[in-house]
Amino acid sequence: MIRKIFGQAIIADYPAALRHIQTEDINLAIWQSPLSDETKSYLKKLQLKKLTRKNKWYGDGGYWTYLGKSTIIEPFSQNLSQKDKLRLIQQTFGNLPSTDGKEALSTDILKLTQEFAKATNCEKMSFNFLVFKARPQTSFWHTDIKSHRGIITLKGNLGTIWQPNKSLPRTKDRNKTYWGYVKPDDTIQQMKSGDFAIFKCQDSKSPLVHATPPTFMTRGYRLALLMGPDRSA
Image (cartoon, rainbow, N blue to C red; front, side, top):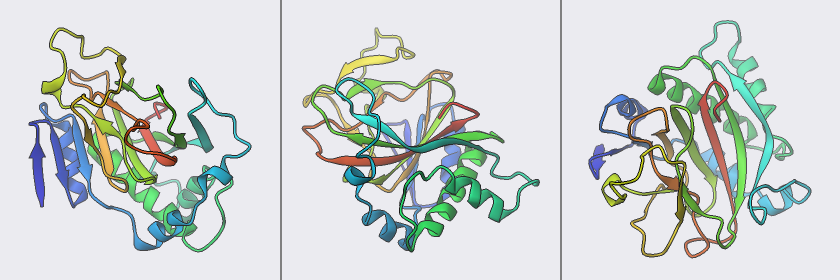
């Protein structure tokens, strides 16, 4: 099943729909619920506050941090075996617990990098894990640099939020990076936690204006996987 909303976003329950991101009028493509049950069970048990207790936090007031390190991968490389690719992915995991489901998470992430590569026509990409914690006045509308971004909220009750094109001021430059703080009366759409999305960034004519959920929408911690062509993640 596939549907189009606001004339700019594609939402489907199969991965090939992500390739609609190459269509001129589409700046957001979402693959619903791509994670295995084993991965979901593993993520459900994670204690993000405990895992990031000793981390350095960034941003005003300290609202985001890295979990592990950024890694570059060629998901269809003929020079690496499937096992080598999974081992490379696991190097980004930082101090994630080595319990049942960690291998399944690695396999799912490799699957997501492969679908991102096919949808955006890139051979090499970088990806990393970020943890966000809701703080007042830290959620702001913005666009990302480069061409495309892939994102999935792995743990947390809400995914990334976004604004439809038609709700944006026509007088503003679409490639403007910052669009102001998220307010309750803004036109807000949200990606579901556990859905994988690819959206256009500033190299395109219509980058997606998006934000991390603010405190009036959610509380607690959120774990997200981000990826982009080359070193853009």
